[in-house]
Length: 130
Image (cartoon, rainbow, N blue to C red; front, side, top):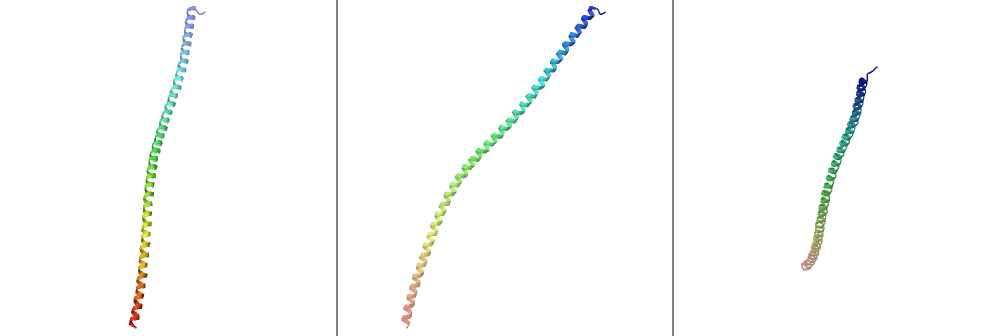
């Protein structure tokens, strides 16, 4: 037969072992929670990095868009200036063409007048020779 003291020691040892096992289970659960939280933190940090990178890309796109808008405005102004200069050149060219045609007509008129005068003079000379 087992004495009462020995039984008590066995019971105490059994209770202590159960407490230890319970604490180990609690510790394992706590460690699992910690790992889960660490994984969550890592995921959130990854998401933060991704969002920062996306925000940076969007900032770059916005900056490029603004640069392109400014370049488009400059090109529009340059186009207006070139169109104005082209109109001036066309007007000047048309004026020069008109002046050229006027001078050609004047030269033709002089030639026909001098030919007429030459023919008249030739006729006068022939009649005086005869």
